[in-house]
Amino acid sequence: MMHSGLVILEHMIPLHIYHAKQCDPKKCTGKKLSRFNLAILHDNPRKLPREAILLDPLAEQALSPSDNAKFGLVVLDCSWEEVECVFPILKRLRFKHRALPFLLAANPVNFGRPFKLSTVEAFAAALYILGEKEQAEQILNKFKWGQTFLELNREPLERYSKAKDSTEVVRIQGEYL
Ligand SMILES: C[S@@+](CC[C@H](N)C(=O)[O-])C[C@H]1O[C@@H](n2cnc3c(N)ncnc32)[C@H](O)[C@@H]1O
Image (cartoon, rainbow, N blue to C red; front, side, top):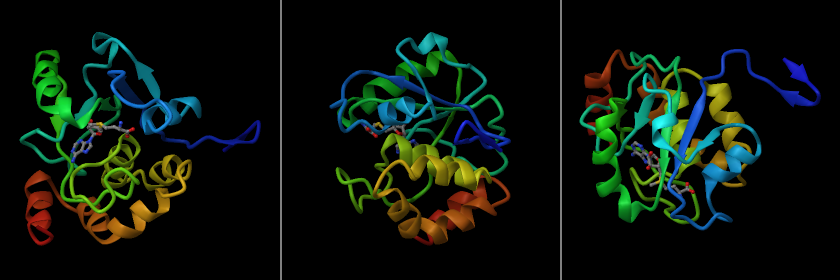
């Protein structure tokens, strides 16, 4: 659908960012998404939608196409040094915590490193796995290295997006580790 020069996708999954203000705002991919109105920034975790899926690198369960993301996806935009302190605190808020399976980062800070994705890469990977490939492309297109993320990870992303459940995602991941 076209509206005032903007492409609005029909079935967009709401993207929420809890921003912990620990990063360089010029390099922050979450802030950039919010400037383009592609994600909503929050500074209070209690305002996040509880029924949403929290993308948590420490979660026990992997995201899979069987997850229901109609209430949205949440990313915690914090420093990687703080991840082990902040995610356990968010456990009290009863989100559905999900880890992303093996994928390589393409952002300039962590290029080529598995699992350590930027905010936009984490959202795009989740959207792709959940079958929202157009929305994944739309957010990555705001970054000059965005397409590289898809090129590096196309094969595993396609396979994860066809998996039946989390167990199958983990089995596929095992072939790349
Ligand atoms: C640690 S922050 C770093 C953000 C960075 N400042 C930026 O500008 O993109 C990245 C967030 O993306 C999500 N994320 C990244 N890799 C992930 C993975 N392997 N599994 C689940 N979530 C992941 C998490 O919510 C994580 O807190």
